Image (cartoon, rainbow, N blue to C red; front, side, top):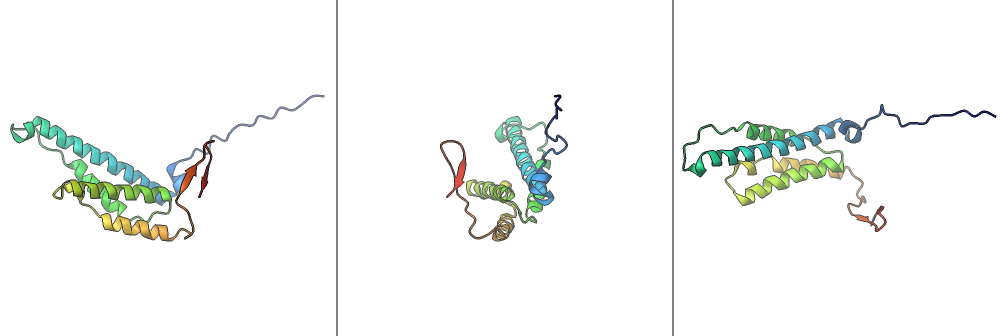
Amino acid sequence: MTGTVVEISADKSKVETLDSLFGRADAFGLRTCARWRMVRAQQNINWAKNDEDGGYGFLMSGGGLDLKPLEEMHECEYSLASLEPKTMKLATELLGVCITVLAAQLEDPETVMGSGPVLEIIRNVKNGLENMPGQTKLVFKTLAHGSGTTE
């Protein structure tokens, strides 16, 4: 009796992407949130480098301060302000952006890092969450054996 060998392998043509996991609009929002964090960090680096080069205002700085990341950060914020999240992931990332901006305002009310369309973003997150079933639980407990359950 001869047997037939059937080779079973995973379909490698279906590579998951942000678009396939979260949909095109939310994937765009997630990419924009990541870009916002990157350019915000770059602007902070630019300011620190300017402080170092200029001796914290006591020396003549050799170069000019690059504010391009700041401009791009604000562009990202206004883009994010137009999004209404369809997934919990984008909703949480948008709220994270708002927390960061509000924390900067608290630390230094004069900072340009503390301005942005926070209210618009929060309003859109609220509107997105209103589309979720009202009885959806946001609490997730991890059990000792590694699986989880909602309360």
